Image (tube, rainbow, N blue to C red):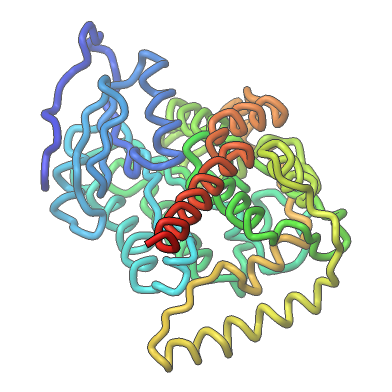
Length: 380
């Protein structure tokens, strides 16, 4: 365990503050959660992450690895609550790294659960995913009675199912109360996946297209609202509460057409909206060929082709995925505080550096530089 800063109480902290650990607190959702916990004035926050990133002077930062039980044991000691947010996300780089996903999302989660029980931590809030119930078929207003996907669409989802099961199975053991939250389509400031991927694809001309009819709706969730739900769940959680041992969907409660939201992001950052419709089954078939023929062939010849163009991603873009937050509202009072319109404004403002107008000068600069070099070479 490497300690990047000593455990300390922020200046003026009241003795009544609860101590919490946020795994993955240097990441996208983790940063929103850490900020809200500190702003509430009710929590003393320690961040546990594999990266030595310090973004909040009011928090204590620890560098450690979820895969090392000794690191986790040291981190959870003395905590009143653990927010287990850390995950190996399904980026193109990680998509085929099954060993990493299992080690972090399943075994790492089990380490957190076991460490909490051993240390007598009373509460654990686990960040799951709405995808744990998605098997490729449309979901409209799905609630917590929807079973786990019998055939998860990708390995990441498989590990999130196992991770959620491990977290909930820890409920009632060693005095530990656990709850799992299932956000859908997280976006917002510090996003490292959704918005950057949209922009990257727009820059490559790949966001001109709509897969399928374009009418399918999806529940998106602002990261700040997900953080809000974590805090509300933690403050309502105990072994005798309705939350103990259960999972809850948390979204913005305002479904949008999938391609409409994609268009809002593209347009807001200066790129064209998707407009050319492509038949779903044709694109799905091509994705199957890429995943099960092209990628293996590339590996056979020593080339590691990394792509997020998978059957799962294609299916996501053309399916209905909406969820009911009624249970979360009933059991711990969850009502999203930031609307979709406001969340989009905040997100676009944060990512203004990716706006098309800010990319052009760099491209022109490179072209000018190349032109000068060519001219100099010609003169010589």
